[in-house]
Image (tube, rainbow, N blue to C red; front, side, top):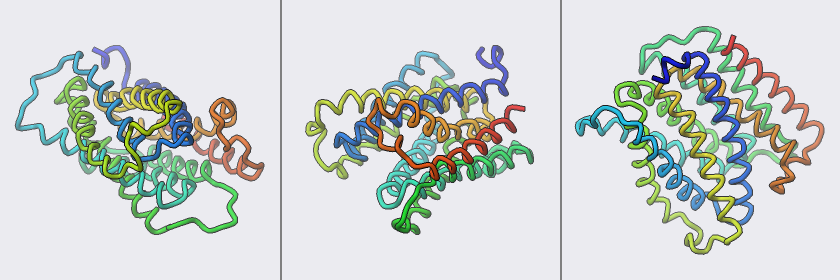
Length: 300
């Protein structure tokens, strides 16, 4: 029904843009919880459980009966999601954000490459150009003034690259199998499996969940809920409308929106990045222009 009301071209522009905005807000909120001592692994565990609970609501949409012999499909997608998360957090933990995030941005290019391979859907020259503009834009957006060389550069590239590939496969497979399963069946199964896998993260906790400061819980729960809603918005778009490459290019604007939010409302969250110097802001302005150019190529 939704496909009849909204064209795929409009849906894969509006919904990923909304998801990018929600992600930017959610990242700011979760950054505040991290500053209060929650830690990377406890944040991931709590966020995955909350996101799985939110995706459960989609089950009410109904869908075709679940065929047991096809349960391996959401299992494979959930494994890609979990591997992507672990790789992403390893890159962030061992390396510098200004290197790791641009490497994650390669996901856009991998999606463009994998779409014809796994689905057989051609990706035009215009979208390839937009994908590369997005990666360069993300790189500029994450430039920082730094007198010391990046930490653990090799492991950051390897872990970040594996994460980018895993998330790209996740997106393309959601598009591939989404229409067969229906968003109301495939997506809850994926995130339930991911929540079960997340219990393996308990061994990485720096302290039990009960040791999380009381004042950190509203930020942790609120940020996780925002990430859950943005995940539903973006992943449902892939499952219903496809066009993973288009959607990812627009969704990459979350880097641009994050910079804008830090500049405009960062003081609400006691975020230190609002005080960055003029050189960094010039790089980020250049990145913003590249990101906007990529989005225009997708929309026009």
